[in-house]
Length: 152
Image (cartoon, rainbow, N blue to C red; front, side, top):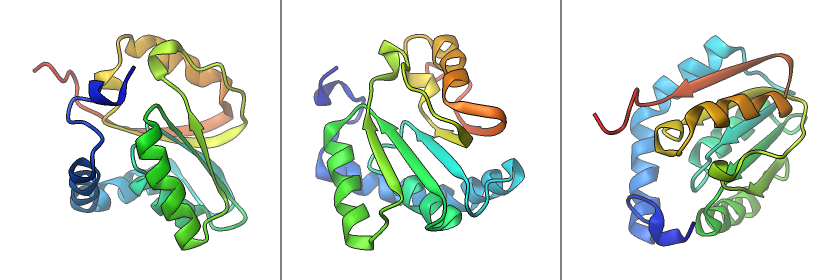
């Protein structure tokens, strides 16, 4: 998949728009994280992290004793996140470039997972959700913020 295949692109204006969108929905996201029990010291995955706005908030939530793993297919978005990670001194954020449509061949023992507006855009949502077993520890909690079906 190329950068231009993102529905709205990955250019600077899109990164800014996603920042605004994140701020608009932040209260809903943090409420979902609270209901999921995301807490200090945990390892949380941000699946489909985009330019990393939620990743940064999750890193603040889990603190330096925790870890956030941002999984994203866009190198452009990951470059933005890595720049922000360095600027903010959030060394407990790891980034992984991966295309969810190609499957998740990753192994972690994460305590939780956040996924916002990703599953509606992949070819096979069931495959993506099924692949989560390999990255979550027993009893892990997940929080999805998704469209039921984007075509609608």
